[in-house]
Image (spheres, rainbow, N blue to C red):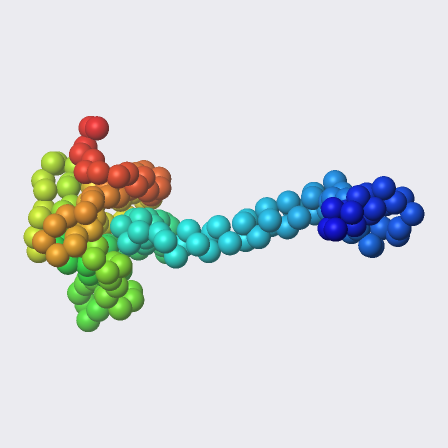
Length: 189
């Protein structure tokens, strides 16, 4: 019996209004609009999702890049000497400026002591003379003539006692621009 109804509808489809059988399919315009909406939503959601899923090590690299470039620019603009003091083996660092206090020149902290993201620490600091500082404090100096010390900062992400990766932060001594590379980079490589 159902077959008979189906045959009847198919034979007499022309005689019924379109809403009885529904639309035959989507128009090209409808498909283009839906695709445009999907692209728009992905374009909005992707940067947000990428930020949430970004690793702590990459975030620390960006954080150090921003801090180094900020201190470089401040040294040139204010015509003062700045330094970035890092505590090797931990996640703490402190930006400072050289100022005269009670007839003595001392480094005064700019901000509170800052920290790298959780699980990331300073692995070592390598100077241009190939000296590798692996513990204690080290400093990167920024001069008012538009120069800074040639150093390489190695950041390490740890999970307990195991290293999960190393990131090399390499500031250019003349421009203050920073290159961030995966792995442990040394001078001359």
